[in-house]
Length: 334
Ligand code: AQP
Image (cartoon, rainbow, N blue to C red; front, top):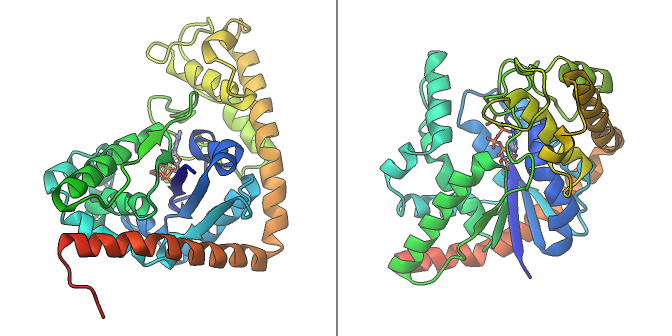
């Protein structure tokens, strides 16, 4: 059975980008077709300036939202990264396999380090090494596939390199995984700045649709989306990034067979496109918000899902991590 692993980090409230780029595939496809493991990767949220109480709150909210979006604990494993020590145990071993040059080439590191420097903060060492922890998250479970948005593809590529290098040096230990990107909306852009990714930790929030935004807020944000200087609706990511972003969002809401370029032919004005996109997003998110409210009324259920998920995850990860310790030359504990 295909083993699937992916995660979401509690650095902010989950966005439409997280949903269309990753979570929806987990819910609609991945949990039905393989042994799917999903994780709230809370350790990754400590790599930038953070508020401890907020990270704790957002970790619970992320887990609750994943269940609200439709992850079914009978069909998949859901847990919090810091509840399973194997991730950090393996990360150190992989740090001994990676080079600092590889880490410094990571696009997210360059962007986030620049952001931290711009606000006068130091850059945490963990921001540099975070892709190695992500590799450990994936390799500990022998994942074959990693369903992610486009922004994470480079990190999965690094994971593949590290797994292959370790196997070649120390003997076959890890499955070499592959990234699986959605066919549309692999990179949902900010509605106010359609040349930047819609990111949950961005300070300026008017271009970001959050899964928990009220319907009216969602409508307002989409109706005010920056469009382009022409008036024709065409799908061209370079020349018309704002319109292309709306077409991708609408196509993704309508389903896999729907293509942004085909949709463009139905519109002669930006206003009509925005209205249909707003309607589609509101309908997509309505059940998620409703289910989230129900789950918030039953926190014991979420706790139990996370406890059982961590227990299963530990059992799966431990043998692989023990193998890696032995292979790299560490004396097994007796
Ligand atoms: N804008 C996006 N479009 C498509 N997919 C996206 N993802 C994130 N943003 C978009 C995908 O969502 C999954 C979970 O993301 P993450 O929690 O690992 O965070 P991230 O990739 O670093 O992006 P965020 O959500 O914008 O967080 P911050 O602002 O903290 O960097 C991943 O599969 C990701 O590709």
